[in-house]
Length: 175
Image (tube, rainbow, N blue to C red; front, top):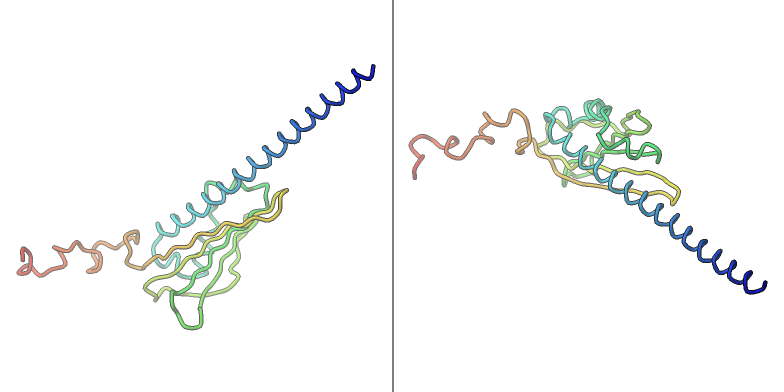
């Protein structure tokens, strides 16, 4: 009888450790999936910003309207109280002028106002914060977008956007 009880105890300990390992691996998978979704949200938001005309991304009011559109991956973090933010600043500007737009629970608010449409380039710092059973998490992504960059609409036709041979005088072509 004692041997049977010892065997049952050993089997119960083994099953408990297997179940505990299973629960922890499921939590690790969920955390990895959420981190991947957060990174994808950031990348999709950056691509959305790059795809829009300069006036749509260079002021807090227009960026707020743009951020009302959710990214495709936002639904992956719907259960984790996701907060997405975009901080826009002028690189190397004295005084650190910037504005922030925040998207949370489907609503968008400008945490700080600003209008940088006259600037030539802007630093965009996007961030996603979420909380799950393991605690708070955060991912960030930074990029510089220029007014006459490769992704700006209406670029071709400006002197800055023309191919080199078109920007030169006809007498200079072929030199």
